[in-house]
Amino acid sequence: MRSIDEQGYHFEEWLTPKQIAADVQQVANKISADYKDKEPLFVVVLNGAFMYVADLMRALSDIRCEVTFIRVSSYYGMASTGQLEFIVPLQQVVDQRDVIIVEDIVDTGLTIHQLKAYMRAHGASSVRVTSLLFKPNKLEYDDAKPDYVGHEISDEFVIGCGLDFDGFHRNLDAIYKVKESK
Image 1 (spheres, rainbow, N blue to C red):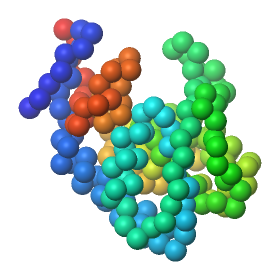
Image 2 (cartoon, one colour):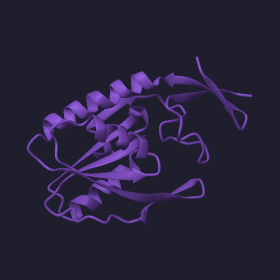
Image 3 (tube, rainbow, N blue to C red):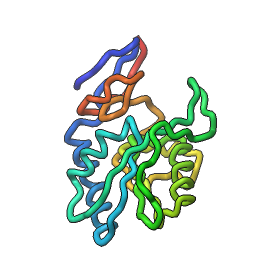
Image 4 (cartoon, rainbow, N blue to C red):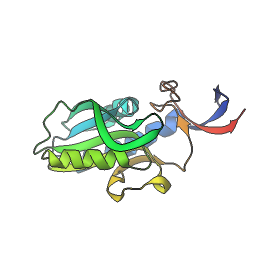
């Protein structure tokens, strides 16, 4: 089993690249079936979801779609402000579009809750969410539950496949869970 030590924490591999690829493929199959005759707009939340969306786009079949990127923040320091700030704003018009928001991980759901409201306020025909990981026990907003989930996880800190520790380790091909402090 592969492991990483970072800033006094020990991480062990939890999801292998093969497991992640299988999770992504099952999500892609569901999205492909649901959007077979539509042209959805995938709105990718940076920075974390870039690796997930790259794998997801390659796994989709028989679907015509667009992809755009946004970067948002709802934190000042380590505390939530409760308000969503667009660091990199949405560039595409969502009016009358089927929107799929792409996240790396959904825990409390604050960001998704606010993004869904934003998309609806701007005329999106439908808004769904896909997330590589989902922490159902942390969810505080019922409307933020992802429609397409790669893998559920308990309330543990994870890195890899776009998920970071202070900006590092996004490039890992597996997902690692923190195991212990050193």
